[in-house]
Image (cartoon, rainbow, N blue to C red; front, side, top):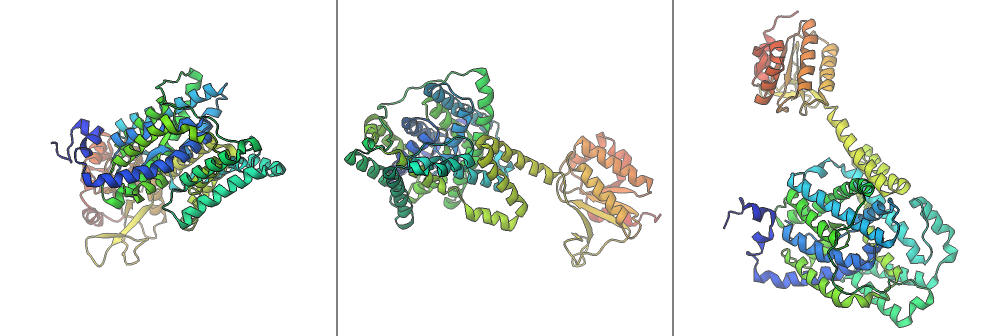
Length: 567
C-alpha cells in the first residue's frame, strides 16, 4: 500500500480509494445517524433553494444525487456537506435571468449550463493548483457581499410569506413594492408563513438538535392537506415528477456562453470561498488536513454531475456541515447514506410534497439565509479596520442597488484593487543598531531603543520588491536621504524580504544608484539572495553599484559604509 504522505496519482485524485479501505465498522452507526440527519435537513432546503434559483422543486432533489456522492468520492473533508446553497442558488438565478430565457425549458437549460461551466472551471483550476485564489478576496468585501446577498434573498421571499405578487427591479424597489401592496396580503398565507418562521427560529434556539426544516415541512404538508389550503388561495408546490433524472448536456448558443462564463467564474469564487472556509473549520477541529486543490476538483465533479442532472450549483455549507458534525459524522460515509435516502425520495416520496405551501418554502429560505447576516462580524471589521469595513458596506450596497452579479464584480474588483494598492505602497523601515544585541538592527520607527547610525541610511523594505512597488520604494529611499538631518555618506538596502527581483525592479535600483552617485553617495545591497544577484548581474545593476557593494548581511554592509569617506 502506498505511503499516505506519498499516495499514488490515482489515490491522490480519488481520496475515497484511501479512506474507504480503512473504514472502521465502529463508525458506521454514527455515520448512518448523521446521514439520516442531514437528509432530513437537506430535503426541505433543496426544494426551497430550487425555487430560489427559479427552478422546479425536483431540481433541488436531483442536486443531492450528484453532489453528495461525487464529493464523498473526490473530497478531502470528513465533515463537509456539499449540496445546493442559498448563495449559489441566487447566483444561478441572476446569471440566467440576465439572458431573458424564452421559456421554463430554456431557463432550465441555461441554469444547467452555468452550473456545468462552473464545474469545468473548478476542475481546471484544481488541476492547475489554483486553490490559493480565495486568499486574494478581502474578507470584509466578501462578508459584505454575502450579507447583501442575504438581504436580497430575504426581500425576494417576503412576498411568499404575505401571499402577494413579487415586484421587479433591484432590492430597494422590490421592498417598496411590498410596502405598497401590503393591503393585498392573504391572511391565511401570512399565518402559515409566519408560523413556519416562528417554529424554525424557536426550534433553533430552544431545541437545536431537532431538524426544524423537516418539522416545518411535515407540518406544512399536513396542515395544507387537512384543510385543503390550495382551495383557499394558498400557493402550493404542486406535483413533483417521480423517478430518477436523466443525464442531459444542455445546448448553448455562443452569445449565451459569453454571458454565462463570467457568471460561472464568479460563482466558482463564492462557492469555493465558502466551502474552503467551512472545510477548514472542521479540519482544524478534528486535526486533519484538507487539500485546497483537490477540494476544487471535488467541487468541480459535484457541479458537473449536478449540471448534467439538471440540479443546482453545489457548494459546502457551514450550517449543513455543522449539523453533520454535530450528529456524529466520522467520515464521508454519512453523505453517501444521505444519497441513498435521497434516491428513495425521488423514486417514491415526491408525491408527498404536492400540498407543501410556498409560504413554508419562503420561511425555510429566510431562516437559512438569516445565518449569513453576520452583524457581529461586520462590527468586528468596523472596530478593527474602518476602511475595510467601508469596502464591505460598498459591496453590500451594490447588491441592493445593482443586483447580485454586478455586485460580485464590484466586490472581486475591489478586493484586487485593495491588494494592488497595498502591494504598491510598502513600508520602508529605517534601521538603527540594537544596543541590547550588538550586530543586529531594529526599525527605528517601531523600536525607540534603536540607535541611529551616524551618516549612514540603512533601510529595509518590509515586503518583496517587484515591478508594482519598486518605484515607491525608491521614492521613499530618496525622500529619507533628502530629509536626513546629517549628510548621508552611504545608503544600505536590506533585501532579505526579496527572494528575486524582476527587470523593472533592477531598472529602478539602477536609477537610484545613478541619483545617489550624482550626490557622491555610494549604494550597497545586503542580504541579497542568489536569484537577486543573478538577475542584478545580467541587468547591469552590479556593474553600476559595484560587485564589492553586495554584502551577505546588514552588519558587514554597515561596516563598509562607515569606512566610506565623508563628502
